[in-house]
Structures are given as structure tokens and as C-alpha cells.
Image (cartoon, rainbow, N blue to C red; front, side, top):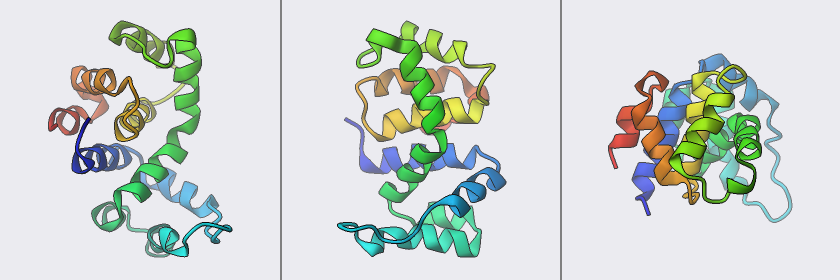
Length: 151
């Protein structure tokens, strides 16, 4: 189990891998009205990001849950594709199975999306999180090797 600080750092590093316009376009599409049973306080970091348009400030000040949630929303399609490629092994893939699934998607998703998917698994403490960490470390071209290795 990794520390909350580590999970937040990996998720923040993954978001920094994206072009700011991609992140801000996503935030612009979010419905930031509180839903029944949801604390309006949870939406403050997203509203601030939408208004100030400063991703670095958001990543420096937002709680881990907000950063991880934004990353999850951004990479959800890539995550679904990785899970689909893993098939019956999705719950507990081996490193080789995960590597193969990700490699199959290299033409469909940018490295930022694939690395973000691995970061979501780490931040969410998925059973495959250690393999996701290993994959990030072995692929420095994805830009998260240092963040992943800092555990």
C-alpha cells in the first residue's frame, strides 16, 4: 500500500503530462453543481480551476481526491480499453499481460493517456498498481518514471 502523498504526486505528475488545453476543455464540460448527497465543498477546487485556468495552482493546492478524480475522468476511455484488452486477467494481471495490453493501445492513445491510466491504477490502489508503477519506471518516455520511482 502506498502513501497518500505518493498517490497524489503520481496523479499530479500524470496531469502535468497533458496539454493544458486538454485539461481545461474537460473542466469546462464538467457539471459543477452539487448533486444530492454531495458536499458542495468538494467542487471548490474544480470551480477554482475553471475560473482561474491555472493547472499548476490546482495541482499544488487541491486535495488528492480532486486531482485523482480529474485524472480518472480524463483517462476513463483509455482505462476502459486497457481493462477490455486484459479480459479475464483485468483483476490481477501479470506485468507481461499489462505490458501487452498497453502496447496494443499505443496507436490509439498518446503516452500521456497511457501513463495517466497507470497513474489512476496507482492512485486508486488497484491490485495491478505495483505493475503499473513498474511500467511507468521502465518507460521514461512517458514522463512519469521519476514520480513513479519516488515511492
